[in-house]
Image 1 (cartoon, rainbow, N blue to C red):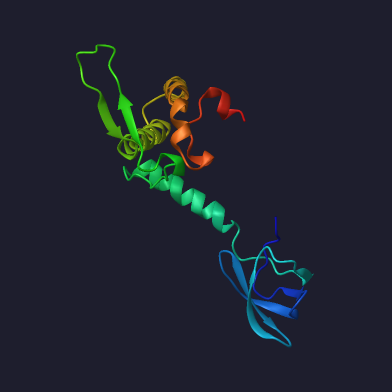
Image 2: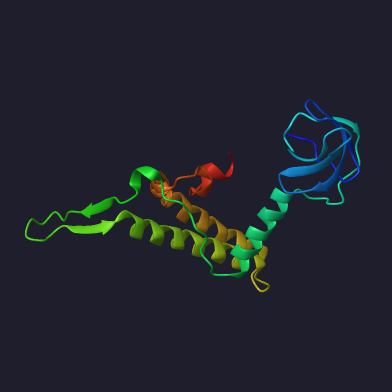
Length: 177
């Protein structure tokens, strides 16, 4: 993890020499180097800090982004775009009944996946609304939360469809990890 520097911090870069941070971006710094002029440098680059000026922001950009996502999930019914795992793209799910007189049903996996994501998003909104409810007691909230956690646990079978593990369902066992 890299150190968060504020404007005015003095640094030494292995290639550009001594400089001063003049602007802070999400993933980069604009640094004015004595001999090289202004260069954009990635925050994770190997910078030796000569004098650190605290950033005027008390939270990192990723913390702010996480907070915004939480707010949007709490107060909107907007579904986020969640990528389907590459191996499933253009795939088809075949539902074959046990009765041979009935036909198979083919469902494109991306249609099924979209429904799973919508279900997950609506569960999250319901969870947040329960937690923010002003009439329910804390005990009522905990009891309802336990049911939602069990529903998440029942849906872990579908985690195989998600591209990123951070989008997975987590039941009771996953909550403690």
